[in-house]
Length: 148
Image 1: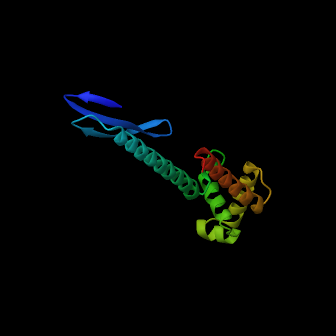
Image 2: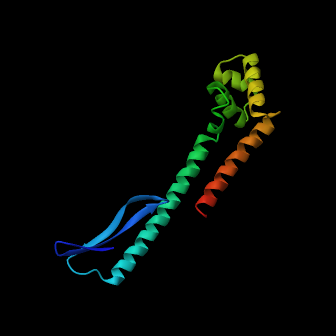
Image 3: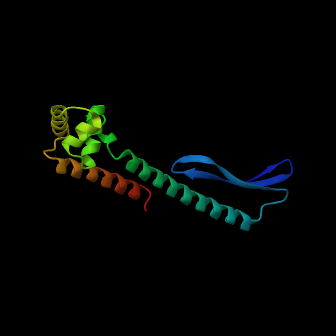
């Protein structure tokens, strides 16, 4: 858009990320803005938008992976159960969980039973499968959202 302010001209283009305007990229000049400059500016903004989308996509993917995908179960499980799920997904055995969390074998078994019941799984393998299926779905959704 060209605007005339106190004898000077400017060209600016909004910088979008999805439906949000992040700001504007523009140039200011004492004379009329050349059409070629406007075209270059529009191409520059498109490049910035593509890069911002890529950054947001990577951030979303990192959030999912850093979160370990466990937060999806926060409403169902207690904090201790979430800790145990994380350890089960890492492949720890009951005795290793006991040692790591300083709890008894019967407490570990009780927590695992509660986790299986709440998440409707019957085994550690099924829990791990459910966990990674969720992560794969989340990643697929992000990639589709940004058409990658």
